[in-house]
Image 1 (cartoon, rainbow, N blue to C red):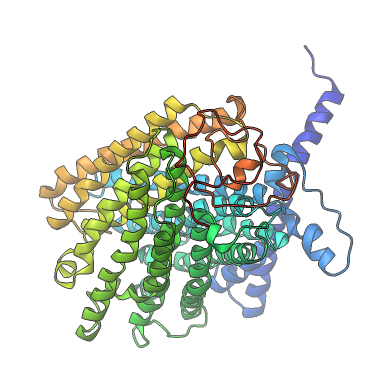
Image 2: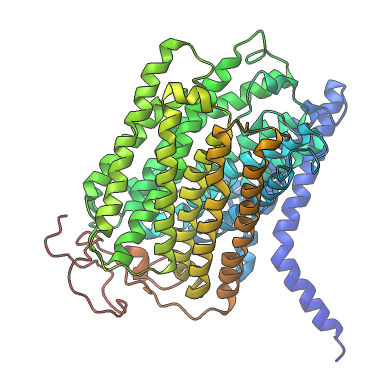
Length: 625
């Protein structure tokens, strides 16, 4: 059957409506980069490919990208008194343009995190392919290997771990959990996501300029000797950090000012508490690493000598880890918040020790700023060893509070092993291994033997990937019916959970043994006696990477073809389950009023979901408010 010209025209209009803002953002970004780099080259008399021209061009390109995506019409022009003519679109199109709807922004963050995770995962599999044998036979040189290891780490920490839970779930569910219509600053929230993609692009483009040899930590003075790709490292981290900072401001303001009537501090859901403490940590420590990145950039562009051989190279480590260790808790606090939301629902049991969990959150927030030197035990003087060994050991106490609250809630519960619960349980198991192995790195004598070995890599991945990524998958499956309006395949979700658990441990458990035996990180070649450990780790890594295809296909297929989800398929009690799936633009048909806590699962309940009930949570017998 022939296609008529009118049908072709309608198809072109449809594609233009779908991709128009994204294409325009790209064109404005490229134009900004071209003009910025060219103007810098002309004014300074240097090549357009010089680092100063690249820097100014990048900043101008980011501005063009943000404005071209819709921020100009939707925010900047109305701010100066002009008319607001921006259409936020409908359907799929709204996810590809500037939006002020916190739910759309949350999905944008989730897709960005998933894409960054896919790229970082492919890099990890390439790294494991290189380490399959002792020789350098995949990457061209050991320097190329180090560059891609650095890109992998930077993407995972700054563009996946934070963006996935804090940007994705935080944006989508904090207003819903609070009974609010939106974030406090919707336009600021809309802008925040548009900084993610340029940050990722800068990191991915760094190998084109020779990469960076410092790893994801950017260590000086090695950074001064790195190729121009080091400049893109600084710019990428700065951009991603700015996005996180804007989100943190919104989370704090929304939690303080937009809670529903009756939602007192003593009734706040655990994920809301976790996100609040996460945002506070971000607000305190992101400026520190921002200063470090700016000073490092000045060392290359001016050049100054803040961190050079004649400057203070160890100052970089202090500034980086002053943020870097709280960053671990920025990631894990949000993951623990997911634990404590999922467990009561699937154990059908009142949350054990609500106030003890808050004490744990508070203790972690304060102590996380006093442990950074344990990353530097091999380079600092003796006077700093004992105090920071002590604080590092002490932080296990508030962490234990949170962990025991989870275990206490599970105890004697009527546990349903649906996929969200499986992922939470596996996250708890992996994090336990990460915490136990962290003891050896907190104690100075053993840390001095294990530092810069694969023991550290194994510990770090058990904590971040095993703890956070599994919690992210738990949240994706738990809240999938809410943001998609569909149900996923429970069978395939459970298969993916078990597959990923086995493959994860097959990958990272051998790293502890290879690290003890002397396998150093950030090296592309090694002695032949370590090959068996590395071969086993590589096989596990390939299986782990393949395993992520199962939830990817399951959730993507279910988003389009899954069974329709009820408003409250899990019989939960928090406010996001008191509206339709997916929620309307204003979130609730009427303002919710909270009359009791959200975790009263201890009484006998019908097995059917709580359809058609009041949006007010029901009081639990004997529960406090």
